[in-house]
Length: 183
Image (cartoon, rainbow, N blue to C red; front, side, top):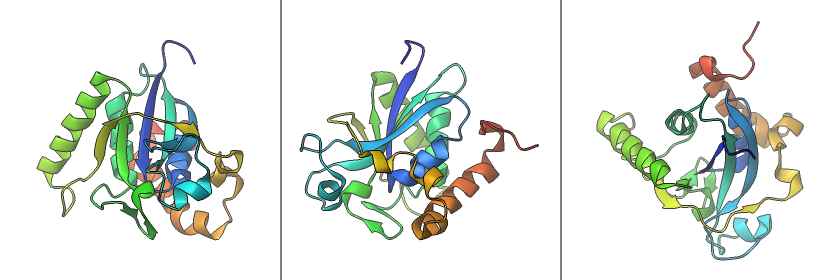
């Protein structure tokens, strides 16, 4: 990592969905699936799925702020998941699937809280945003088989039914933010 890059850690349901979208965003250098803000050191996927570790499934995103601002990153985040459901994204239920922004600096905290207020005021959703804005704590990288899961398993039923529609939604609504422009 260079000093010019920033890190964002976001939770919005299954980490496969977020990773697949952010892999395509211009200015994103790397995306890593993992677990954050729980009370168990280096939990396993099975432990996190059990709901007892307190962790959320997250993506840790390294990005170049000269190309992509943290606010723009968050705008993508809010566009690809439902930030109004507590501890749930679709059929994925539990605190590990909560909507959260785990900030890495006071500036990220301020940007996140400001954007949540703005979006709530705009009443884009029928319910208020419940996205938690909390300092990053206790991050650990998920097992290797979770990394680039969608890219390696696009024909898997969950990927076709859940991940692919989120990727398509991002492409449709944020074409200008794609790393590779269609020809």
